[in-house]
Length: 332
Image 1 (cartoon, rainbow, N blue to C red):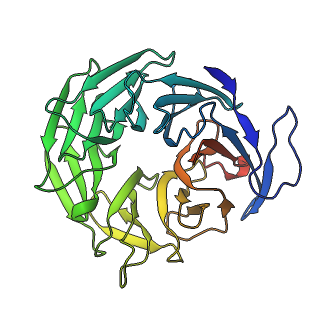
Image 2 (tube, helix red, strand yellow; image 1 turned 120 degrees about the vertical axis):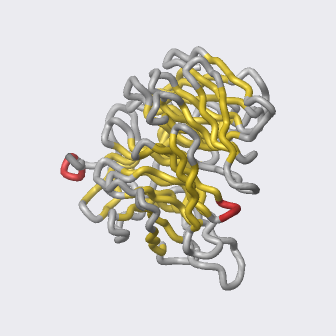
């Protein structure tokens, strides 16, 4: 199914854009930012994570819609249904082979989709619960298996898994400095694995930080979300940073109501993240300094920097959003 997403207003409307697209202009630290929102053709699709595709479009998972979606910079949405009901597609990445690879958490499979929508699915031997997925430094695709392993997928779908520490449940994963970096929320660790399966794990200094999402920073560090439990005396929500040598810093979000969701490094060099607790999209500098950018949304989830110098995000129940950054903000 292909359709132009139904654009709607986000924030305080100052003027409407032409060509039938309604936009909002919000004032931030460096001036106005235009924000556009597009509804997926499938209602209550619960769009999840996003990835930039090889053809300039953005691709995303639909957790409840059981589909993989594609949206162009003009807001044209195409949806590709998955054959097995309830597969729960979760994370998605662009592989070195030019295809989109994604995890089917409930079905225990890794999916591969060409830019034209041709699908192949590969079951994890022995079962599994795949979550995060990333293109690796070796040309393969790697994923985090919450069943207790880091998995490697070859271009033809061959899967091999490397176990992690006993009891650990890897969740999100990214590539950097020829390694794979991943979060282990239940044991409060960040893991690093080389392509041969060699493993190092670092305990997050903040007690009960529960690291979840992680992103590779342009500063050669790795940024991650800390989601402490909602209980008395728990630490404040934070965004953490770990160097390639395992050194940590973390930065509070300024409010116990804040709960960081996903995060991504934008073309402006800042770390953008969805604040699901306060229903905002925000940004930090590489030094952890918060900016005045606070864009109100409703239940934001995934976020990614697009090839069009924009920040793209997903929003419950069925919205794909785009934040246009001005040329002066692009990091050259």
